Length: 265
Image (cartoon, rainbow, N blue to C red; front, side):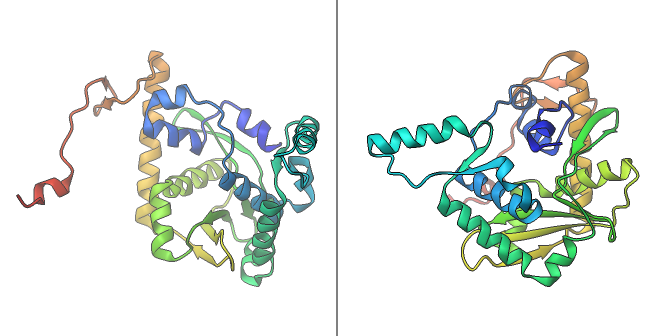
């Protein structure tokens, strides 16, 4: 199954949960957004590490033309017209993604984690009465280990921990692990490989502690319950509050940020 086919399926994914954490209306009204340059870099890097031989089926390298000229614009437009659903990538970004991928592949420890398994395999299951899906970067069958590649501005542990919090990676760990376990897979751990996107492309290997994973699990399960409630009632609110029975209130009671109580007058 291609990445496009996977994302076209209606089951709830971790990305959907991220949208629901903003509001149910964000999820209900989700729209396709053009990938940013960083997203193109990350996707190309993933492809070159995990599915190198399949790179050209999803990416097309842009011709080196001057788009400020008429001839250059026409050549670029012809290129776009002929690549279909492939993602266009400029040569500089491709070379950077390849250098990052080569750095990963040359590391014997990292390579050992990315062996004896399958890459980009789609999984579909049901959790708490909700149909869900997950597509791990890599599943190491020998170790029972889910491996996830992350491009990052810093692989320093304290900085990557901030990325975990900001991008809800703790939810991803719990969600992916639970989806695979529900299908009978052995899951003994979840490993993040953080790769800096600037030379010399330093890497870091990270696992989350049990407390972080349990917070991720309780969070995604609460979100799935809210989703079920919204689905049953046919109403997906914007910014709203949910009580202990998942009843929706359009009025949200606010508290001041903690720092305000310590502000010196």
